[in-house]
Length: 250
Length: 250
Image (tube, rainbow over all chains, first blue to last red; front, side, top):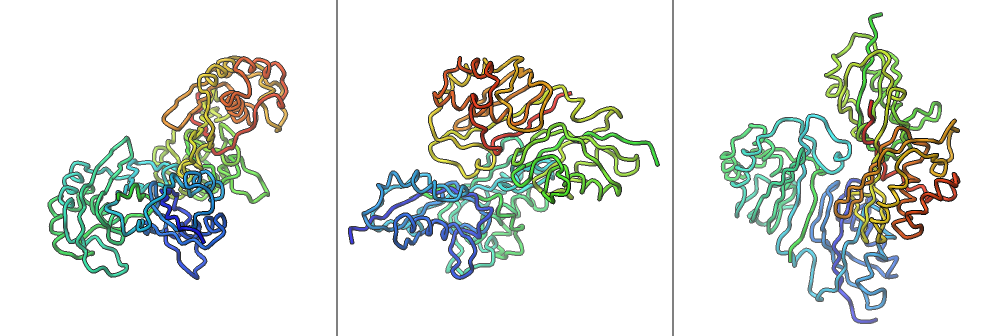
């Protein structure tokens, strides 16, 4: 057995048909991790375990998910992995780049921060080409109020009010370094950059900002919601279709 | 029975899951026409027959297909049709506008010209978000040669060499008034405007322009292909995923 290689992949996927990133052993449900491990194992002719930076949920997409896996030195050169493996993968999963990394690199534990995007299609009439990749909102939104509310969310806070039911965490304190708006015609793109995200956090943050845009809360009430630490105080969990993991920083 | 209304709809659809626009009686296959007729009939509580401007093929999309249908004067006002019917339609079909038109308006026979778009995603690495809406071409394309070749296609010609196997036509002479290129990053959008299109014509025109981009033909050879009137002389029929009906002119 040769020296082990640790290979980092940047991958993109349309998550519509998948039950999230993480393998769900024994369920028979298709996940990104299971699909990737199966194709890599068939190519490298050995069991492959893939470690992902983020456990994206069912229906959530990625433009820049990062994974790593170990394999023996035999096999194709790392730089040829994208072209070789992409033809074996289903068309909704793509390897963008492959690089050799140090033995102790771990896609999840080495990550410093991540950037997510939530897309709202804001128009009276829906668009069938954005249905898979956005949330449709036909009502008029007060974007200025949403931008103001976002400022109260930026920074280091206890985000308990913005955590969905899921695995328990030691602390709900996270640093949301910035929320950026990119409005292009009917598309409202919200970018969330932070050192870590709680379960469903981006979708609840977006649902709360939407409620501000719909005048259900005033921007300053974001402070009360944060202080309450109560999930019931924040807005709804918006659909997974609008969410994409854009980039993982190391 | 009241006075009849003739209603024109502009519709958009993601054609991926449909067996084309036109109803295929007795086959049980889902088509755009069948879906639209079923939903309109359930709302208007009467049989509805829909006439479409273009019989888009299986997997082909539309941003601006036009249809018309007759109904009695009862029922909702025309301007309320989009919002009312869109909630009943599947998410991959959307009514953009509805207007009352003269009794003799026919979506297909009244059409003066149409505009189609073919999207090529030209990159070494595919993009999972464009897979449903484009053709993936990883090889380098000579865009200047393609633009030059397109000039030979513009105008009034016998397009027999660019007609797929399908229903017979009296004449294959059509006027292709213009082919426009819109290159935006990795996306090459080809727009074809003309008074009428033969079966598979846009897909064969695109396949032939692609072959020019790949240096299989020189631009001037387009003239030989047109003159040959032989389908075997032209390029391949590219996949339906890249094709959309953009607009119908009256």
